[in-house]
Amino acid sequence: MALSPFAFSSMNLNQLKNLSDNLPDTERMPLLFVGHGSPMNAIEDNPFTRSLHQTGKDLLAHYQPKAIMVVSAHWLTKGTFVQMSPRPEIIYDFGGFPKALSEVKYPAIGSPESAKEVSKLVSTIHPTQDWGLDHGSWTILKHLFPQANVPVFQLSIDYQRPMSYHFELAQRLSALRDKGILIIGSGNVVHNLPKSFEMMQQGKEDYQYDWAVTFDNWVKNKLNQRDFQALTDYTQAGQAGTLSVPTPDHYIPLLYNVGMASAKETITTVHESVVLGGISMRTFRIG
Image: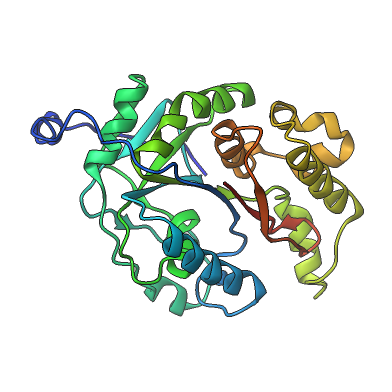
């Protein structure tokens, strides 16, 4: 996906002046990483989407998030931006899918106050009302929170930065968890579309490349060992890592989850599978 252009409005920023300077502290929010896979998951009923439904219910049964911040693999920028529209636009950033997918609605509201807190924590994160909710967000939120009753906004990925930058930026943003903000990373641990297309053309949807399984398990083991720093260098896994992450866009959201985690927190697997040869649907919760 190409880097996104931005236009800033001083009027939009001035409207934020009357918002409180600080969000009050709340119970520490958990973290969620979702392997979102195909946009078709938005309208499908399968083990993955059912796991999201149950996870959303569990979260709302125990927590009251003020807002959700999604770090999606599909908002790639030069610089880092936070989306603060009061009504984020739903973006159908894909092609070649059934018309029904582009007719899906998710009537989310935004959270300018929470977005402002992000740019306060890290002054180099720029507020914008451009963008909205891309399919890395709404296709999973539709299952997690089907009533669209929790405000949501996105944080972009500065695609020119190294892996360590994203991990360290997440550490600086971890205080958001104490401000009632639920953080969701949305990407895929393994995301090799060319190889997956080969399996799709052959009708082998359940096929799993050995290297994809190997790398998915490497990530799982690093998570279980709480060796979060190691995850910033997927090449440590050798050829399995480079084949699984031919481009880092879908891998980077993972670093925002582990960068905000502490070593003693519980890590719970929500869903794990490898589909179409080279797409990992690994989804997990921290805390």
